[in-house]
Image (cartoon, rainbow, N blue to C red):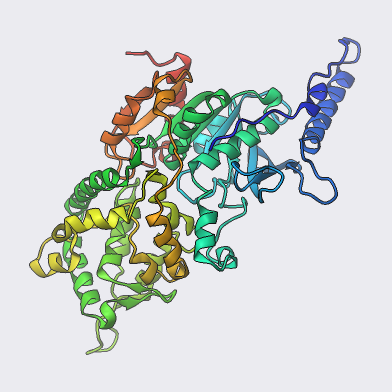
Length: 509
């Protein structure tokens, strides 16, 4: 359920406060102007409806400016409803964190706002250490807002430890249903009307899952949008659960990526087969990981999640496999997988720090239908193709798997074990709310530009094109110059290209 937010009226008199013109005292006038602006913004944070009274948390609290090289940053915290459909007076509140970022010297300039929506689900916004890449380009003309999506980063983070406070699997599942794109958009609107002067519209930039959120935004709250930029993130929008279509297309792409990997590093085909055989023959069907989980042949295949779809990921995977075996220091010693590799394997993923990714990955595709462990079913339908042990015994290349979450992960990955029942409840849930409005998208009036990566392993090209045909006025940049991580890898070039498509610098045809 998407909620329309009314702008806080108490701050408007300060926003329109003007000083008389004076040519004799320009420095005094400048000083007074900056003072008024600072006061206005401080009072804006204090004067929001529902601000602190008798110990209740303020709806918006802003921090002081601080610096990293060439950037100025300021932290904002917002107390938002967990459930926007519930009565605002009784709904539990959670905190959503957003970091305001500007180029040095532009703190008080009147700049348009750009909200960045991070990929995921379940990952926090970037932590700037300097002005570089797409952020540097954005700060040339925008006031950038880096929002930690609810449940991530500093936004009431749902970690492997914090979620254990909710003892019942049913209660935790009911809590987690409020952490999808619909409520991320509700949070963005809550922030926009309290942060942007006059509650004006802002530009949004959605990367990967952030692009999914951007299409939800276009569906239900277009009044808050000035422009939309999407990079590798046009979602499937059909009713029901689209996960089956996603994983069928994804299995084809990950097969292609596996084949390309072995062409790049043909020697690794035998290395991978040896590892699979070793794991299959080990006691218990695998090797104990440093965290206490177990590495099995099917777990080993999940290296494709991060090893096949990003820039330089082939290289990283190859160098990781170079050190899979311990050296034989004593003649006759048994061959064994190195601690280096086992630790690197666990570090390859973020399940320990970002468990929401595993819990909500399939539900992000659901509207009024359950996923029923879609990836597991789709891969199971082609089991001989992805059966690692069988492939190794037959001397065939072992295919990796891609961006897929399987039910057995909640048995084999130590940090996920406490949430096995929760994951099952979410997989069976049928009454998921709508995330997209196709009629609204057909009648879209907001300028939209999207980078669609032809060989994207995470957001399928064909499915992206099907959705793009339903978004009125969208402009597409189709390229194989970049992988899914093009926004990060391209410096400011990807953002520059998309902005040029909307401001007239790139021709329509």
